Length: 242
Image (cartoon, rainbow, N blue to C red; front, side):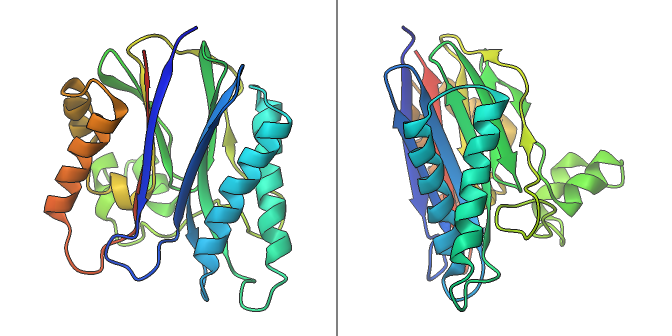
C-alpha cells in the first residue's frame, strides 16, 4: 500500500485569536484531511472552524468512504453542526470556509467551500488548485483581473460560499477519483497562508524537501519573512505520497 505522509500546523499569526483549525484521521482503508478558516464575532470564528473539522472527522470515522456522496455527507454534517451552535447568543453569524481531502491510499477526492484552498502537485508541479468562492475569483474568471491579483484584491474577504450560511449548503465537490501515486503531493491551506506563498514557491520548496515537515518548514520560513503587524491566522496540511 502506498504511504501518505502528513504534517500540519495552525498559527494565530499577528492576531489575538486563531480562527483556523485543521486535522486529519488515518484509518485502515481510508484517510481524511481537512482545514477550516472561521469568521464571526465573540470568538465565533474559532468555534465555527473547530466545529466543522471535528464534525467532519467524526462522521468520517463512523462512515469512511470516498465518493461524492460521502463528501457531501461530511460537509452537510459540519454545516448542520454550525447552524445548531448558532442558536447560542452571540454566535448567530459564525461561519467557516472548509477544504476536505479523502483517499483510499490509491486515489483521492476533495471538496471545498470558500477560499481555503487545496493544491495537488504531480511531478513537482501544481496540477490542480481549487477555485475560491469569492468575488475576486469571479473577477479573475471573467478576465477583469489576473489570477495573481486575487491575493491582494480589496474584496478578497467577500466570500460567496461557506459553512454556516443560512439555507441549503453550497460547495464544490468532486465527482470522480484521481489517481494518487508516489511522488504526488497535496497542500490544504487557509488564505492567511496562500496569500504569502505563490504556487511557484510551493513547487520550489517541495523540490527541496523529502518530507512534508521539510516542505512546510521551507514555506513557513518564506511567510515569516514577509509578514508583520496584525497579519492573518495561517494554517496548512501537507501530504506527500511515498
